[in-house]
Image (cartoon, rainbow, N blue to C red; front, top):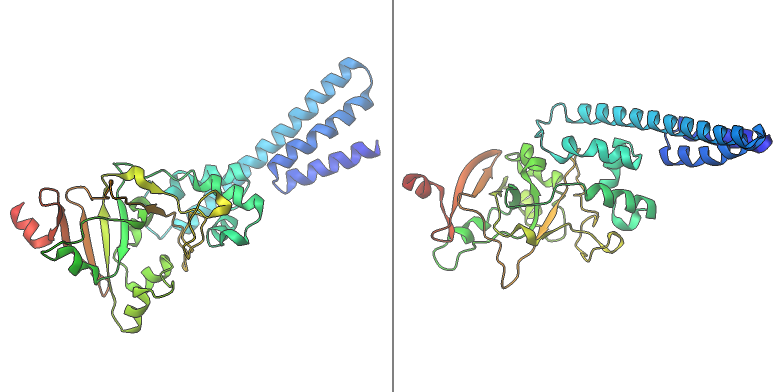
Length: 304
């Protein structure tokens, strides 16, 4: 009976610590030992079924408790953020965390952890959670922060910029942050990478940047910026786990928009480039799909 006692102690410990998978697994050998001690095929079978059922019910209670705790933590975290109800954090994260047996604060810390600093178990958990983020489709409004100096390139008469590529976020996840000053945006998006135009702007006292807001015509070209441990190929100076390493309290899944010679990432008609200066947002340019370029916002508004 010593083995049975030890087995049940391990099971109780797993339940108390909220280790859902372990609770079920520890319940199986404990149930087998207890059933054997009962004697008789019928009693043994009944003992196994009863003990396993107890383990599964206890695991389910622990799972429900984890879900409630994460809902409460997420609610407190987002109380003053004005985050969209359609955001990944509100729509998907509670179920994802419960499935992976992760607490909200653990997860938040892992979003800021580089791929190479994660254990194999953490990589698996974070990849499954990141894969729960809704993909970019033709109906997805995306946002992209760009240096203020790009505006001239988008509006020039000859050979203007007219595509959107690189790192983007879904508006559902980032929209509540649009229009904040450059210092805050710099922290949210971890824009302190080498040779960052945003670092130079702050050093020069220039509180200004651009934000693209719109849909894309070739969203199937988007990908999650995973590094090798996550099954990807990216080597950019980022976490490589699919989340931005925010220097603030935000949680921002990111995507990478690819372009090829055959497939250009043109915005949908009416997509907007906002200019944010000293924390004030103004509409600077609008995409015109007849001209296949961005036009000044005042010109677009006069014609429409």
